[in-house]
Image (cartoon, rainbow, N blue to C red):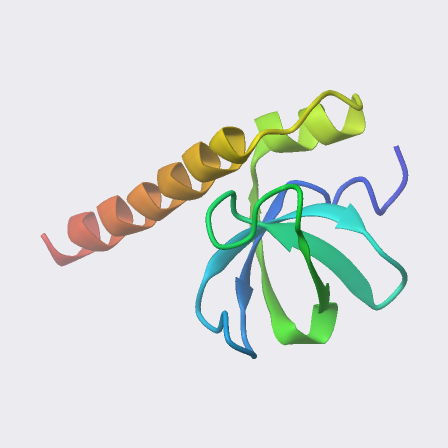
Length: 101
């Protein structure tokens, strides 16, 4: 596993463009400065968005099942992406609720 594999499956927030403040998952590496992102909703697996890394806020959280699917060259579905994104968003709202209470 090289350093780039560690990036695949990572959750990212878009910092610029029409999709600003949306949560995506990195599904591929385009080159040194660009990655392909998708969320299974606005951006399906069949039409990922090529985005500059500098326009993304990369989180520490990795969608392990997405990462493994891509690395093992299995078929990634929009449903898989949607579930992962929704799960992470739920985690974030649960964390903010528990901090307030």
